[in-house]
View 1 (cartoon, helix red, strand yellow):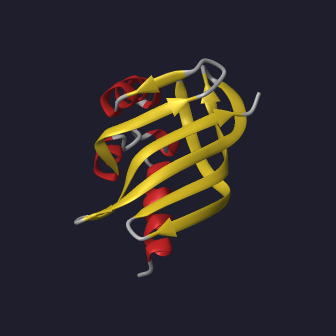
View 2: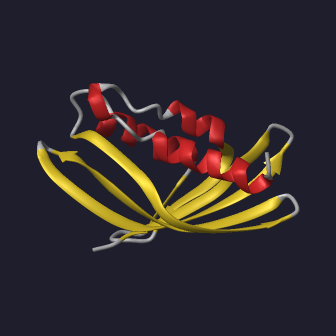
Length: 134
């Protein structure tokens, strides 16, 4: 499998980790397998925030759990541009998301950038940042 194909798989798995359609819990532990333990996670708006991996996962576990505020949630990439140089890669892409927030339908979109490094176990996410469209 090419590096680009491997990065495509990691990216799809990453987006899929938040999926809780059908009433099941999101597989947020998958993030720990895809993201380096000391990765940097940043959202630029509406409120700029930087998290560690654990700081990022735990609130989402409550939000996406069965009976949580966010149900039938999924997000997916709609376009991307990936550049690979040796053991590093950068992906810049647009995404959409939808679900039920507090029982009401919602949809959104945004931009994500993901930085990858090739490890002995394969490509992993070293950092990611996003901005949701208003």
